[in-house]
Image (cartoon, rainbow, N blue to C red; front, top):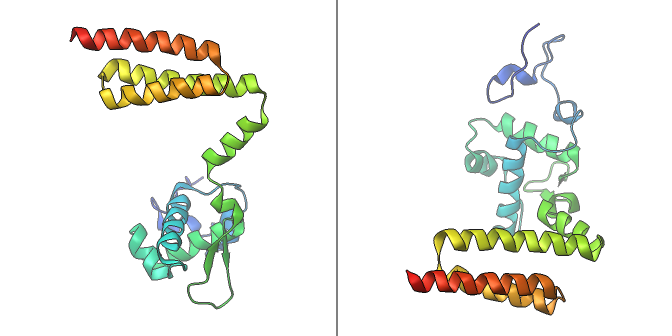
Length: 183
Protein backbone atom coordinates (compact mmCIF):
# COMPACT_ATOMS: atom_id res chain seq x y z
CA UNK A 1 0.00 0.00 0.00
CA UNK A 2 1.29 3.46 -0.95
CA UNK A 3 1.81 6.01 1.85
CA UNK A 4 -0.52 9.01 1.85
CA UNK A 5 1.14 12.42 1.77
CA UNK A 6 -0.18 15.90 2.40
CA UNK A 7 -0.70 18.19 -0.66
CA UNK A 8 2.52 20.08 0.12
CA UNK A 9 4.54 16.86 0.22
CA UNK A 10 2.84 15.35 -2.81
CA UNK A 11 0.66 17.31 -5.23
CA UNK A 12 -1.03 14.03 -6.17
CA UNK A 13 -2.41 13.58 -2.60
CA UNK A 14 -5.82 14.93 -3.61
CA UNK A 15 -6.11 12.37 -6.42
CA UNK A 16 -8.46 9.48 -5.81
CA UNK A 17 -6.23 6.37 -5.88
CA UNK A 18 -8.98 4.20 -7.41
CA UNK A 19 -10.39 6.44 -10.15
CA UNK A 20 -7.37 8.68 -10.69
CA UNK A 21 -9.67 11.73 -10.62
CA UNK A 22 -9.12 14.81 -8.49
CA UNK A 23 -11.12 14.77 -5.26
CA UNK A 24 -13.38 17.67 -4.36
CA UNK A 25 -12.65 19.90 -1.39
CA UNK A 26 -15.76 18.58 0.33
CA UNK A 27 -14.52 15.02 -0.01
CA UNK A 28 -11.05 15.94 1.22
CA UNK A 29 -12.51 17.72 4.30
CA UNK A 30 -15.34 15.26 4.97
CA UNK A 31 -13.38 13.24 7.53
CA UNK A 32 -12.35 16.25 9.61
CA UNK A 33 -14.00 18.83 11.85
CA UNK A 34 -11.14 21.32 12.05
CA UNK A 35 -8.94 22.95 9.40
CA UNK A 36 -5.49 21.64 8.55
CA UNK A 37 -2.45 23.83 9.16
CA UNK A 38 -2.50 25.05 5.54
CA UNK A 39 -6.24 25.76 5.69
CA UNK A 40 -5.75 27.64 8.95
CA UNK A 41 -3.08 29.77 7.25
CA UNK A 42 -5.54 30.59 4.43
CA UNK A 43 -8.30 31.35 6.95
CA UNK A 44 -6.00 33.66 8.92
CA UNK A 45 -4.98 35.49 5.75
CA UNK A 46 -8.62 35.93 4.69
CA UNK A 47 -9.60 37.15 8.16
CA UNK A 48 -6.79 39.72 8.25
CA UNK A 49 -7.53 40.84 4.69
CA UNK A 50 -11.22 41.41 5.46
CA UNK A 51 -10.34 43.30 8.66
CA UNK A 52 -7.96 45.55 6.73
CA UNK A 53 -9.95 46.13 3.51
CA UNK A 54 -13.57 45.50 4.43
CA UNK A 55 -14.13 42.93 1.66
CA UNK A 56 -12.92 39.44 0.84
CA UNK A 57 -9.70 38.76 -1.07
CA UNK A 58 -9.52 37.31 -4.57
CA UNK A 59 -8.05 33.84 -5.04
CA UNK A 60 -4.94 35.43 -6.60
CA UNK A 61 -4.47 37.64 -3.53
CA UNK A 62 -4.79 34.57 -1.29
CA UNK A 63 -2.31 32.73 -3.53
CA UNK A 64 0.26 35.53 -3.26
CA UNK A 65 -0.39 36.19 0.44
CA UNK A 66 0.01 32.54 1.45
CA UNK A 67 2.85 31.75 -0.94
CA UNK A 68 1.06 29.25 -3.19
CA UNK A 69 2.07 28.83 -6.82
CA UNK A 70 -1.31 27.70 -8.19
CA UNK A 71 -4.89 28.85 -7.87
CA UNK A 72 -6.05 25.24 -7.60
CA UNK A 73 -4.38 24.89 -4.18
CA UNK A 74 -6.20 28.02 -2.99
CA UNK A 75 -9.46 26.72 -4.44
CA UNK A 76 -9.07 23.40 -2.65
CA UNK A 77 -8.35 25.04 0.72
CA UNK A 78 -11.18 27.59 0.36
CA UNK A 79 -13.57 24.80 -0.65
CA UNK A 80 -12.57 22.76 2.40
CA UNK A 81 -13.06 25.80 4.68
CA UNK A 82 -16.51 26.36 3.18
CA UNK A 83 -17.34 22.69 3.73
CA UNK A 84 -16.10 22.86 7.34
CA UNK A 85 -18.27 25.93 7.98
CA UNK A 86 -15.54 28.55 8.45
CA UNK A 87 -16.23 30.49 5.23
CA UNK A 88 -19.24 31.45 3.15
CA UNK A 89 -18.96 31.99 -0.58
CA UNK A 90 -21.54 33.42 -2.96
CA UNK A 91 -22.00 31.59 -6.24
CA UNK A 92 -20.13 33.24 -9.10
CA UNK A 93 -19.42 36.37 -7.05
CA UNK A 94 -16.07 38.12 -7.18
CA UNK A 95 -14.54 38.75 -3.76
CA UNK A 96 -17.49 36.98 -2.19
CA UNK A 97 -15.68 35.21 0.65
CA UNK A 98 -16.88 36.05 4.14
CA UNK A 99 -16.20 34.61 7.57
CA UNK A 100 -18.85 32.67 9.46
CA UNK A 101 -19.47 32.98 13.19
CA UNK A 102 -17.47 29.78 13.65
CA UNK A 103 -14.41 31.47 12.09
CA UNK A 104 -14.84 34.67 14.10
CA UNK A 105 -14.77 32.93 17.50
CA UNK A 106 -11.10 32.50 18.37
CA UNK A 107 -10.14 29.56 20.55
CA UNK A 108 -9.02 31.79 23.43
CA UNK A 109 -12.42 33.47 23.59
CA UNK A 110 -14.14 30.08 23.66
CA UNK A 111 -11.85 28.90 26.50
CA UNK A 112 -12.47 32.10 28.49
CA UNK A 113 -16.22 31.73 28.03
CA UNK A 114 -16.00 28.15 29.32
CA UNK A 115 -14.09 29.39 32.37
CA UNK A 116 -16.64 32.13 33.05
CA UNK A 117 -19.40 29.54 33.17
CA UNK A 118 -17.28 27.32 35.45
CA UNK A 119 -17.28 27.55 39.21
CA UNK A 120 -15.56 30.56 40.84
CA UNK A 121 -12.91 28.24 42.31
CA UNK A 122 -12.01 26.95 38.82
CA UNK A 123 -11.73 30.49 37.52
CA UNK A 124 -9.61 31.55 40.53
CA UNK A 125 -7.26 28.60 39.97
CA UNK A 126 -6.87 29.47 36.28
CA UNK A 127 -6.21 33.14 37.10
CA UNK A 128 -3.67 32.34 39.82
CA UNK A 129 -1.83 29.96 37.45
CA UNK A 130 -1.59 32.71 34.80
CA UNK A 131 -0.25 35.21 37.34
CA UNK A 132 2.17 32.59 38.71
CA UNK A 133 3.63 32.27 35.19
CA UNK A 134 4.14 36.04 35.04
CA UNK A 135 5.86 35.99 38.45
CA UNK A 136 8.31 33.30 37.29
CA UNK A 137 9.19 35.41 34.24
CA UNK A 138 9.85 38.49 36.38
CA UNK A 139 11.92 36.51 38.88
CA UNK A 140 14.10 35.24 36.03
CA UNK A 141 14.45 38.54 34.15
CA UNK A 142 14.06 41.15 36.94
CA UNK A 143 12.34 43.57 34.55
CA UNK A 144 10.89 46.77 36.10
CA UNK A 145 8.05 47.16 33.54
CA UNK A 146 6.94 43.58 34.09
CA UNK A 147 7.25 44.23 37.84
CA UNK A 148 4.77 47.11 37.56
CA UNK A 149 2.39 44.77 35.75
CA UNK A 150 2.62 42.33 38.66
CA UNK A 151 1.51 45.07 41.06
CA UNK A 152 -1.53 45.66 38.85
CA UNK A 153 -2.33 41.94 38.64
CA UNK A 154 -2.01 41.54 42.40
CA UNK A 155 -4.33 44.51 42.93
CA UNK A 156 -6.81 42.97 40.50
CA UNK A 157 -6.87 39.77 42.55
CA UNK A 158 -7.75 41.82 45.63
CA UNK A 159 -10.53 43.65 43.75
CA UNK A 160 -11.94 40.34 42.49
CA UNK A 161 -12.15 39.11 46.05
CA UNK A 162 -9.29 36.62 45.92
CA UNK A 163 -7.70 38.04 49.09
CA UNK A 164 -5.59 35.00 50.02
CA UNK A 165 -4.00 34.81 46.58
CA UNK A 166 -3.44 38.58 46.53
CA UNK A 167 -1.73 38.45 49.93
CA UNK A 168 0.61 35.61 48.93
CA UNK A 169 1.57 37.41 45.70
CA UNK A 170 2.07 40.68 47.59
CA UNK A 171 4.57 38.95 49.88
CA UNK A 172 6.36 37.56 46.84
CA UNK A 173 6.46 41.02 45.28
CA UNK A 174 8.25 42.33 48.37
CA UNK A 175 10.82 39.54 48.06
CA UNK A 176 11.44 40.39 44.39
CA UNK A 177 11.86 44.09 45.22
CA UNK A 178 14.45 43.21 47.88
CA UNK A 179 16.26 40.99 45.41
CA UNK A 180 16.33 43.83 42.84
CA UNK A 181 17.68 46.29 45.44
CA UNK A 182 20.60 43.99 46.23
CA UNK A 183 21.65 43.96 42.58
